[in-house]
Image (cartoon, rainbow, N blue to C red; front, top):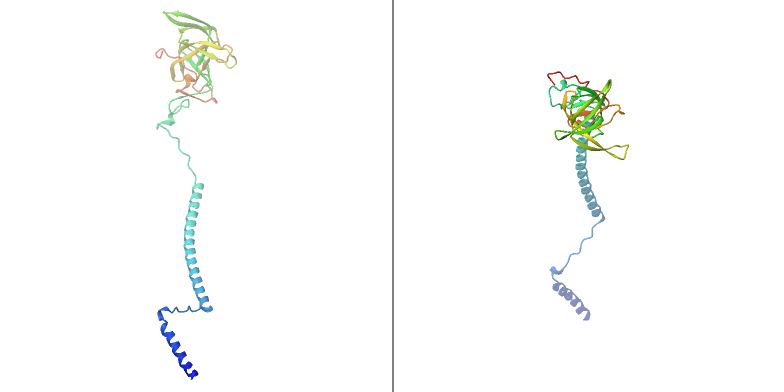
Length: 255
């Protein structure tokens, strides 16, 4: 009797348990992946990765090739420019007749003077050799027996000039312009010199020039031309001498 009851009870109990469990509460068990499936997934992923890398490398290689081609062309162009003969630039001139300029002048009309030149002094009506000295500020004239005096209430000066080949000294009287103080490089003292203004000719140029008066009898040249005279009117070429030639004696008409 007990065995029969037990056989009937257990099936009913199982039925009740199944009926009390809702299908919505059941969570399906994940199916385990097999080794062949895992291998296939990895192979597919690897193939996609290789394909992506190949496309990117192809794009980079294409850009790199384009850049290298352009760079090589630039190098070839530079080589052609380097080996191409370059014509010397023609000198720039402000005058179509530049070839007609004399050799003793620049194209802008300045005189070319050498280390020495011959100048004409109207006050003694004669020419003298002169040394060009860009280190001196004021021009200088060899003078002896310098005497300051007054004429018509204004200061004047008289002095004698020695001339090569002439025994008799040339006496000069002219207005005194001012005094300047000169410090010699070989002496500590300052020398006070009178300054005169004389008309001088050098080449085609004729103009009034200031000279300091000092005894230059121990010097080779009785006339020295400094920067104040040279500026704006002349350029110096110390490799040459007497570029402007010896001044001609003025004709009566030009005097």
